[in-house]
Image 1 (cartoon, rainbow, N blue to C red):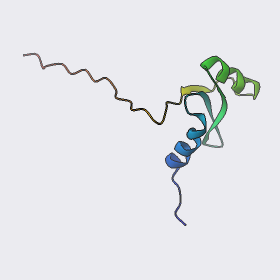
Image 2 (tube, one colour):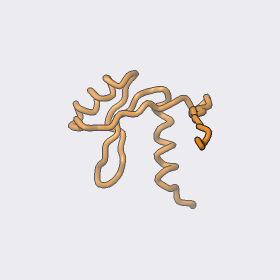
Image 3 (tube, rainbow, N blue to C red):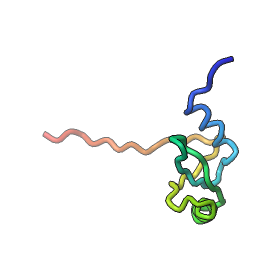
Length: 78
């Protein structure tokens, strides 16, 4: 049976939180989701109620849409 790397395992975990905000923290060297909500405030409150007041907040995007980051390129000045 093939092993699943940490990135794949984390990506699979995120699928349950599509279009939601999550609060991330670390426990025993592993990133864990300690709260979630419809907005960042809900996710932060959920994390704080579980004893994680300093959790990082992250919005999980839709998995059916495409994200194209804006890249600005400047011509070299002479």
